[in-house]
Amino acid sequence: MGNLTGRSSGDISLDELQKHNTKEDAWMVLFGEVMDVTKFLPIHPGGEDTIDRYLGQDATEAWVEIHTPESLEKNLQHITKLGKLEARRGLMTWLFEKLSGKPAQSSTGPPAPQEDEEEEEDDKGLQFTPAFEEELKAMNGAFTLESLRRWNGVELPMLISVCGTVVDVSISDNFVPSFGYGKLWSGKDCTWAMATVSLKADDANRFDFNLEEMEEMQFKSLAGWYKHFTEKYRTVGQLEEFKDWDFSKVKQTAQEMQKAGSFA
Image (cartoon, rainbow, N blue to C red):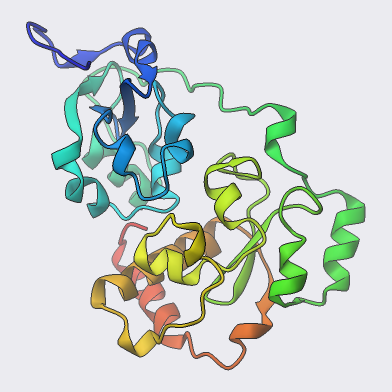
């Protein structure tokens, strides 16, 4: 499983990657690097099912939806780096492009064609239509946990809450009702899960924590993901349960990350 003994080049073809797509022989690409994650699957915090669909594929975009960059380093004892994907670039190039919004110059030739990321229509979840937009407008930007629950991609297009800010993630290929992040968080608040980088279902809709008592890493993680979700997706309202909470320091930290060009 994932044995590259005798391989003369560190580059791995897409065809080779796609052969290793089972739980017993699991490869995926993260930041341009091909990884053997076979030993990581059984201990993945969110369970094996949340990452099964990415085996034999590039999982970078899905990974950064929730994991901080250092999460990869923390789990390297369970993950084996095998080499770079042919015509793809590594972590530093990927980060540069995310931070600058510009493609970095590469000496390895032109980038590989973009893979088809279209999901099956049934997997995508409900998308916004004029009728759904009218229903959203009728909310007047005010959500409760009970009303947010219906915006789960099945009854209504998918929304989630981070720091009490409700965002529309219905367009994301990584948020679909039947698996992964969508199955965990659709129609829910994800504040504590984002702070602790947790994929446990019980860590959604949690309010038994204090912002002032968060560890520094948890606070920075929350700020980073608040920045990520509020920049990438449209804001559609606020969660009433958080109306008396003060997230100003989180938002300020997120703004400072933006000024410094920090990754989130």
